[in-house]
Length: 399
Image 1 (cartoon, helix red, strand yellow):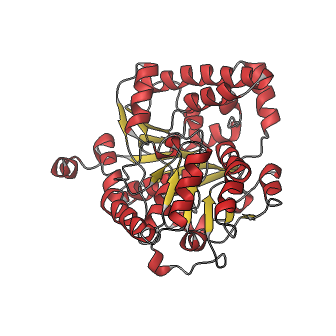
Image 2 (cartoon, one colour):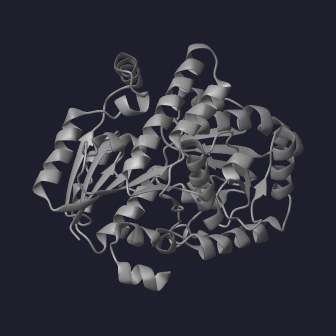
Image 3 (tube, one colour):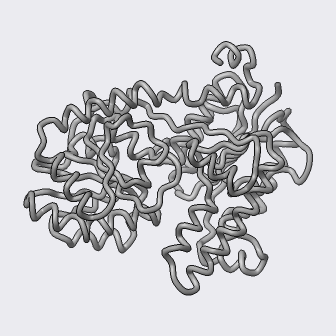
């Protein structure tokens, strides 16, 4: 077959946050045996400086800065009758870059990562398309609408409705629609009636995330850790709830417990949590593994979570005891190696029990064993070969 055009809403390098981790491993998998042409946005100026690394990986690449703010995207959406999710990523330069590659290179397949990039598909005809929605964005906005009020609730309802119509239309024209879990794929089928829907789960690099190779940071004493992109609303809501509603009760039982919120771009709301007793907001760190290695317990108390949470897989791979909300546990085959807690009292009890339990270390080791057995990237991405007809003989042999 010919070359592959890989479109991504965020440049998939370095693989240092959830969406970039998945897209990076997909890109590596495809580029091992085929010429891949990458076109992506960069919303961090530092991501424009990875040309040498990308040269070693793909046949060609074009990375465009994305500077459009939320207010402008919302105004354009209301003026044009489109979802904000699409106007936020609408850029004539991106359209020109895609058209140039399609006209210049022998593109046989287009791999689209994230629904925002589907707007750059050819209007009709063209190469076969594999669409990785990852999560069902329209369902996420529906969840937002359920907890919002006033104009914001109206905007979230509008976004959910319009994005679901867009997702259904895209799914109808592509060869396959991918989601990160069976549950997310089933939800998409149920809400849109789409066929050709597949689950391609996330994996984890268990060599990189190995506690035996990492030096813990963060000091002595009981430490509860949350990792994530800290301008992402579900993460902001999760740490705010945990710091204000859960931590006081935990410190009432184990007074010297600390809560570290580890991740880049903390909002003002998140930074303010650092004024609370026992709460530390690190901002961006060179490597989250040191904080995970130091954690007595890793938490993921997300009220809204779609698909498989990389932060949970990483904590499991680092052999940490983990406490998650029911939403954050969805889609993870954890084999009983993590604790699921719903509400303040249950979360307090789960975390404090693990802090004081010598057997918690064994639970963490079992979690790592589960990840090694279940979530290697090679096994998780093998179905891509059959979907793209990249290696039909090998795909049949693996079936």
